[in-house]
Length: 295
Image (cartoon, rainbow, N blue to C red; front, side):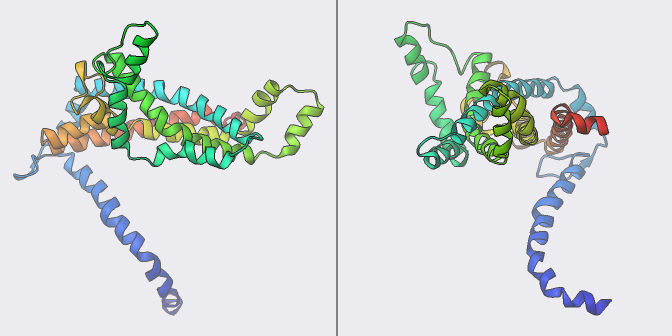
């Protein structure tokens, strides 16, 4: 038995660097953050064990729940239009249009662009006094909007930036799903006299459900971890009335600004639980109906 294991030793050694690095930079920080959540520590002095006090305060922390509400509102305002736009773009790219490869690259480019650099660009777009968007509003005779000082204006600005960043990524995923649908299915629908709209809603969307499920679940996971957009657009304090204070931004402030690493670790685990629960809810809502019946 030992000789058989030694025979595969070169293969084990070949893949071991990944697992070693994952254990050091992945598993260990997660376990250490759980240990830290039961401590009171400013990052310099000795740790003080406080038990569940950090989690008890987290449950009653009004600022934390305000950040949770802001995050969910921004997620809804960005995910719904982003999914619709991505689906429409995917349908367009799947049709017989010229330069489809160029369009695919152009739509995917925002996802690989520096988010900090683009947040600075969006700051100039949504600037209250000198922003491009308010200049356009003035040009058509409308009053300017205080995008970066009004609570709802802040949420809209952050949501638009998220849509801009992720719509192309989801469009490419939807395009892959559309191309995996057999052409015979559409041919049968045309023979049965189905219109283009009927074919889309009764053939394309049902067959695209697994891809939609993946997109929505990933959007939920990413959307509940919004950080850079809010920090660069409105500052790490979340702007007026904390309208841009997201969960991860609140965690960052408590841990690295207030130097309360124990409570920051508790917030991180609270975010983890919320993300998992929300992803499960999305999975149950959008999963295949027949699968739900079997279960």
